[in-house]
Image 1 (cartoon, helix red, strand yellow):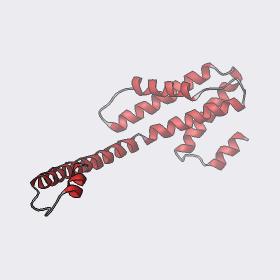
Image 2: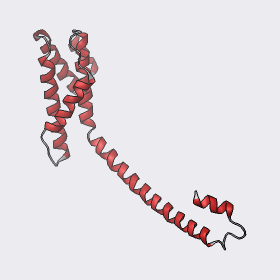
Image 3: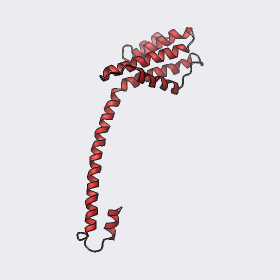
Length: 159
């Protein structure tokens, strides 16, 4: 704002106005600092994106589990689970799973803990006659996500 004011209010030669030259110098320093911060921000964004991609398998398993337990409400309307309940289980799995400095081991531990926690939590609320169905669907959907079985094979087993 100060630079624009100085440029519009200067009388005579711009080169002779020392306060304008000082304001231009401060603006140049500020622009340089902003450019440095933008470079750091771009590097940080790359690191964040990389870390986010490492956790994609956890998100994929979480998605499989959540949509499976919500689909169980088609078997019986009493089997309803809210997203909040699921996210609580997800967060607990992140906290309680085995910690490891090796990312791959950490991800495997989270996935294993999450799968088991959701399995236990869901089976606790199912009628006995539906527990086997849930277990089968869980195994099939996990295998489908790993490309061990195709969607057509899944449908053959379900029908």
